[in-house]
Length: 195
Image (cartoon, rainbow, N blue to C red; front, side):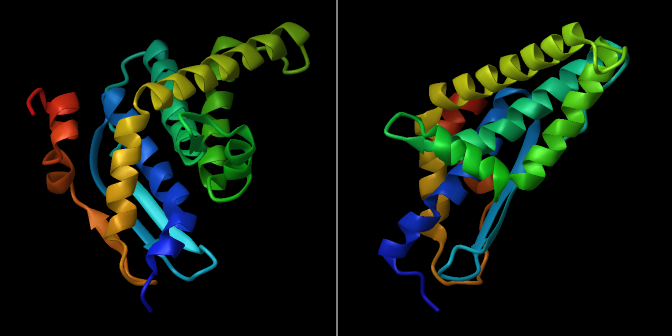
């Protein structure tokens, strides 16, 4: 069944979500490949993914913390990108994303936050000083993710547009391959040093 053009707008947020993961992952030095999206029905049941290669050399505890922080920033970037509206973030949409379609992202980032907490504050979790430090780490990473999304919103929205415009039928996956992504002039300019 064909996805009508006026229906595509309802699904744009899912495309922007994956585009946000993709752009922020590249900005933070991770290797990326494809972005995939499939809308299964008119109600918005979907499956989407951005393939990010998470391999990164870890030689000490500081590397673990840095890796986890980057991973959290990338995970939040999906929800922030989903909530992009009129050059700003719609925080109700951001919070809704974390509760619904970005739920698995949210679960992954909480695991990484706990790893950071356990390394940087290896005491009892009821200690108010530790809880404050933990909250400060989370706030720092939220701020950094939001900053990267807002600074790169045009690029994120451009990739989101390509994803949503590539959808033709329900229940048929559209893929932007690594080669296709790297051939986009704005991607070339940003990440490959030529336009």
